[in-house]
Amino acid sequence: MADQVFWDDVEEGTKLPEVVKNPTTQQLVKYAGASGDYYQIHYDQGFAKNNDLDDVILHGALKNAFLGHLVTKWMGPDGDLKRLACQYRGMDIPGTPVTAKGVVTKKYQEQGANLVDCDIWLENEKGEKTTPGSATIALPTR
Amino acid sequence: MTTPASFLTEEMIKQAIGQKSAPTTIDIEKGAIIKFAQAIEDDNPVYNDEKAARESRYGGLIAPPTFLRSVGVDRPTYPFDMPFTRLLDGGSDWEYFHPVRAGDWITAISEIADINERTGRMGLMIITSIVVTYSNQFDQVAARQTSTSIRY
Image (cartoon, rainbow over all chains, first blue to last red; front, side, top):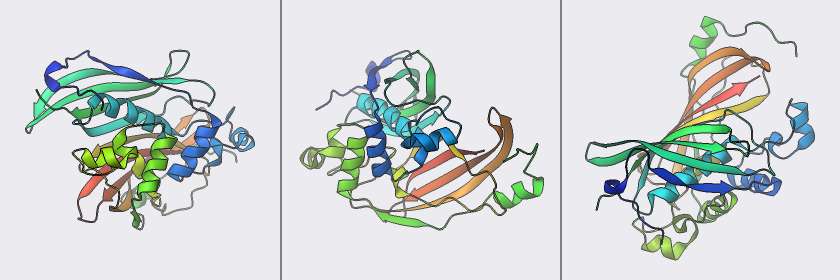
């Protein structure tokens, strides 16, 4: 079982353990099937090029899922995800790794819940934040 | 297509905001959850392992946070001809209220919350903010997703 993180032990500035993903064209096809998003820019290179793209690109929603993985892995079995937001600022292509990162920006209590806000983002090999976002998580206390 | 300088009028914006899709209802199947978790390469046992999920506080498999995307809700229809056929996803903002469990019946409805236009690298773009509400069989709102779609 995954370790449990407790609200008591978290501070502003606490970093979330990184999650590294190595998306391939095969993963994009698997994701297309699993999500039902068959838009051809994610697996048909000719179609992508006709749409002014250099290559097939990762589904935005797959990058959203990578960020979901980052926060749910960190919050542990007793954490509750309240909000997950991200913007697709830069495109990512299969064959290059992306790293999901996050940091706690606020720790507070609201309506009986022990909450933290986090900045989260996906970073490409060049260190560019292609997919910035934020999350709110309720954590258990000791 | 030659890009016009402007497309949306005040009247069109007024007509578009509040437009809703027809509802879509799907059965949240266990196999679909597991395939989705495999596709995003998330090995959390509450999505993948019936035994571990049964022993968790959820008492069974739940769906990963962005799984609801696969409900495949219709987009609201624009109340005018939309000549911009190319589509990009600008982002998503999810709020979660109840876990989505294997066996749930989820009904989704989408609604245009806002629409505007902007000129970018690829010419004139129509930016639509769409709110999707996902409710379960107990009429509880399980999640709400605000997504931004970019047409160009």
